Amino acid sequence: MKPVKAVKPPTSTTLRTVEELCDHALVPREWMPALAKVAARYAVAITPAIAGLIDPSDPHDPIAKQFVPDARELAARPQERGDPIGDDAFSPVEGVVHRYPDRVLLKLVNACAVYCRFCFRREMVGPGRGGLSARALAAALIAEGVPTPAGKEGWTAATVQRVKAKLAA
Ligand code: SF4
Image (cartoon, rainbow, N blue to C red; front, side):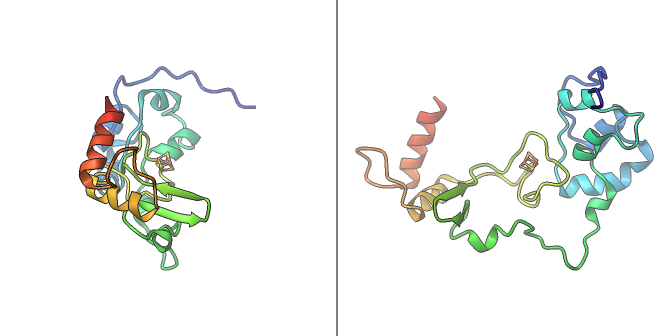
């Protein structure tokens, strides 16, 4: 098995822009214009731990392939779908994917720590895409028949806000 490379972390913060990737030698500066277009559509986040595992001198570094943007991400073939995992057909209300009878996916936040370049849900995650509002979350809980907390009148936006505040405390 190939040993994990012990490359010194080149950054102490998560890299989120193409310029930062250039500054840390993760992409050549001449790629900047093309990669800026990719980053405008699909979020980028390379944590210090991940950056530390990338060997910038290796053009085929497997960790870089997973997290560093590539201009080819914007090339779509006719047979590709905007919703590659097919969530939409199983989404009765915003934020819910109910594909199997005994489990439900509740998409509370549209953010991720790393933004893999192959992510099936990449069209909906990233900065500016927000998360479920209290009203939408209440609608999702009602649609899925989730029991309300004891003593509460039902899932309203106000009820959800109270539960969220309790969870955050
Ligand atoms: S949601 Fe999963 S696959 Fe998508 S970017 Fe985050 S970790 Fe990667």
